[in-house]
Image: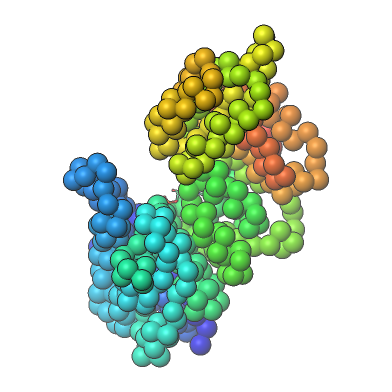
Length: 411
Ligand code: ADP
Ligand code: ASP
Ligand code: MG
């Protein structure tokens, strides 16, 4: 029998009524003959509450205990959905990550799935049961400890389960009816896409569109999982198909720019008057890399005196204080005059595989942003995207400007 994975995010399971609604979506697929594995998130807001409790209890917490605490939200919703399904006559049972098991490495808080054993799930299907799986969690078998996959990780659980049970497709149900040209909550004129290429979705997700966790797109791409993003708020008896993530070749009308993403999770660091000599970049970025701090955009400008240089780069917001502390510790080695930091910055990016074959795409954006008085602090480009770092107060203006510029507005 053909198999299907259905994933429901936090807003879709926010209370028992919504969980009952989810059960109706599941029943539809059972009635049409599928063997179904459902992956659920915690109720919306729950994981944030759990994380806040962890921070309250211990500033420098043990990440293994963090995982055992934050994984609990998904345990609750998987049990509730199993109950709701049985109530409407659909046989179901809940599964926690360790029971399947979903094996991961031991990078607590952002663990990677290594393998998922399909045996027990298949036995459940043979008994006529829906498998309701707690997303976001797994187990590190050598230590026996519960792990979690990083925020938004239930998407990755779902796609990985789909690969493991050879599902025909993986439907990611959420609170929007598909992937849009940009966050529809920021730009009402955003358009829903029928299809988006894996590479583009990967960039969109990495550059801030939180509709899918980055790793879920990687897993879908590597394991060729046919993945849709669709709405749980559609009528369970008459749902729309949503957006298919697919190969570039399967998209007929390719635009130059497919989407605009933005990320508020950015901090800028500027080092002034750094000695302009060989090895200086290594003395700055070496210690940051050792501390596992990801550096993204980098700009180097020669100062007026031609002896020193100014260096600007970005790190994730969460790493900002740590990065500053490391640089201050290495102040003498680096030989700089001053260090400035800013967290009220945003990275806005345009993404599209069509950029490979079109020149001057980014240049048009620089002009359009300048016309709106938006100052660009840093730029990066690659084959299918470019990003600009700007002041946070201009986020919406910049996103809307680029959205219109590249013809993405709804007609
Ligand atoms: P879930 O709880 O179902 O996992 P998320 O909140 O993680 O849902 O992701 C869905 C949200 O992603 C939407 O409500 C929307 O605001 C946001 N989003 C950001 N960029 C996009 C985009 N390009 N297309 C669709 N949604 C987007
Ligand atoms: N509940 C987890 C989170 O809020 C995982 C998820 O929803 O995908 O990050
Ligand atoms: Mg999500």
